[in-house]
Amino acid sequence: MFTQEDSRNHKYKKIFWSVLLLVNLAALGMLLLAGYTKKDYSANQKEHSYLIGISYMTMNNEFYKIVSEEISARVEAEGDRLILRDPALDADRQKQQIDDMLDMGVDVLIIAPVEWESLSSVLERAKEKGVLIVAVDTDIYDEHLVDCTITSDNYHAGAVVGEYFLKQCEEAKLVIMTHETAKSGQDRVRGFLDTVEKQKSIEIVKEIECKGQLEIAMPQLQKVIDEGVEFDNVFCLNDLSSVGVVASLEENHMIDTVGVYGVDASPDSKALIKEGMMQASAAQFPSEIGKIAADVVYKLLNGESVEKKILVPVKLITQENVEEFGIDRWQ
Image (cartoon, one colour):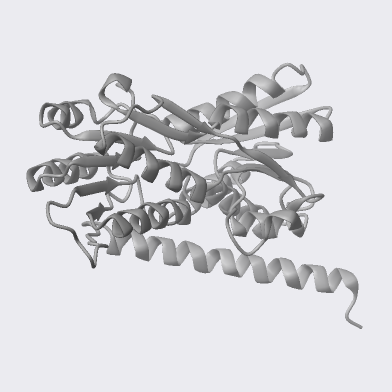
C-alpha cells in the first residue's frame, strides 16, 4: 500500500535529485562562463548612442538575469547599446573585464562587485574618464566613486528573518552560511545575528563561507555533518545556498529536524517553503531593482540628480503566505 509517508518521501527524493541536477548545471555554467558573456541588446541604435557596460558578480544566479532583463529592455527602447560581461565570481577577471569595457569607451558602468573592496583602482580610472557608475544588489567599498547604489534592504532582510526565527525557536544551535566578500551578504548575516543573539539560548555553532553558491554550500554543510557538529537550524545569506543546504539535509535524513531560513524567495526556495522543507525567506524584488537602475542610469545621463543610496524593501515569506507571491516565478 502506498502510504502518505511514502508519498512524502517520494516527493522529497524528486526535489533532492532536481537539486543535484542544478548543481551539475551550475558547474557546467561556471565553465562555460569562465571567459565572458558579451551581448549587444540594441536592434534600433540611435545616432550618437550611449554604450552601457554591465558586470554582475556571476550570471549563474537567476536574480541577476532578471535585473538585467529590465535594464536591457530600457536600453533597447532608448536606442542605446549594452555590453554584459560575466566574471563568474572571479574578482581579478571582473577588474580586467571592466578595464576592457573602459577601453571600449563605455559611458556608464553598472556593477555588482565580486569582492566589494576590490575595484577601487579600476573605478578610479573610470571616474577619470568621466564614466557614470551605478552599483546594484551590493555596495562598493569606496562609496565616493559610485554615483548611485541600488540594493535590497539587506540588513532588514536578515533582521526580519531573525524576528520570525525567534517566534519559532526558543533555543537553537545555529549554522550560518556566509559570503564575506560581498557587502550584501555581510549585511544580511549581521541583521539576522543582531536580532537572534539577543536571546541567550541561541548558540552559533558554525559559520560556513559558501560564496552564496549552491554547489559550495551543499558539500560544506556535508562536511560539518561528517564532523559531528550538532545543529538544528541553518540561516543562509541567499537562497542558492539554501537549496544546497536543503539537499544536504535531505541526503542525510535531517530535513524533518533542521530548520532552514534564507534570503531571496527564489522560485526554488518558495517551492521548498510550500513543502515545509524551508521555514522562511526574505523576498527580494529583482525586477524592481532593475527598473530603478535603468531609471537612475538615464537620469544621470540627462544630468539629473539622483539619490546616492536607494534601498528596495523586502518582505517575509513563510508557508502561510508563500502562494500569494507566485511559486513559479520571482516577485
